[in-house]
Length: 483
Image (cartoon, rainbow, N blue to C red):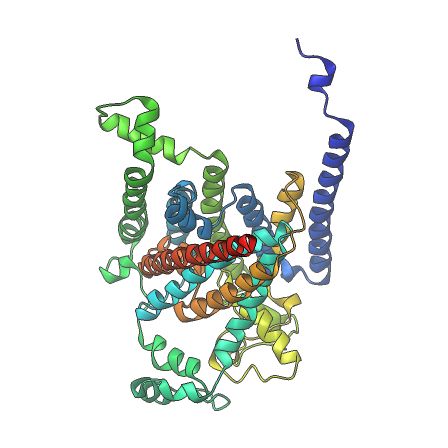
């Protein structure tokens, strides 16, 4: 029989647990109070609060499952563990099912990405960067919520690198193909903008705008309900997920599973049992994948319902109706994807700070025409990112996993360089691991798989370069010790 000392939590541990639970409750209470205050100012801020609270939910699940695509590719290449990659595929499958329901209901807010070489190149740069930061776009946010200062540096680097890229101009503008310039000049643009001012404007208007963004259903001329279910969901998302899970099982899990179970001559049923065992090997990751897939679809549905309720297509229209005009684009719009997205709102953070420092940021296409530069207090997707940080903080505190972690000079350098590469890659690819992969393939856009291939290629090279760097550093340290 257990003694009292064996069943009772030590007083010091109980006090620590109570303190951290109270801190988690305090963070949650802060979000609730600020939400109530926003609704008291104007009930139409409900639209922005949808982003906030879905962000909180995303953050809690990301932290609970340690869910990060950088970890997924790093674990595969470095230690040959498929746990996180499996979780990502579970999330993709479930998001695609919910997204199909949302599309059939008529409330989908999804818009396909343009398909072109830029997706592959940008994704490779992004993938290379995530290896050195130790976190993807969403992973960096939830790790910041755990108190990781390194991840906070990554967020800063992503924000400012994007803002600089989309507004920069210099001698390198001359390297832009003439065909892009001709196409950009031919566009009917507002007189306030000069589309040949910088290379990114020319790249956007003279190349990306000439590409077609579409779904698999539209490619095959099946835009109705059957097309959504068969082409967008089954063919574009579910089938690739099944094939990827089978590959992960065959290359990374099967040998160990058969050895543990003693199956010398496994049948088809044994193999299915092995795949199931792989998918459920990490309960936390599997639960996070299920939750994220469902939540991401619901987020799109709720935003679509609110847009219909308010009679708008963009949050900028609601801001105008509430009397807020500063920071809107020339089209009186702001960045408002209507679903889970990460990097563009972070670019707006960087751009807003630079504008307050006296740098003109609204004379380019990215900010001036498309996304605007709203005050961070009126940036709905920006609050989603902040919500992820708060949600992760709540979960980390409640699980006693929150800890302030200061970076070393070396890790700070990696965070800034890797974050900068992630920002550059995200702008070239027109999205990150969430916006250009997770949200695309689940809604029938095949360009997302192109992004995944590019990210994997970049991450593979990054793992090799990072391993070389660490071996080199270890050799230097050993040499110093010998001296």
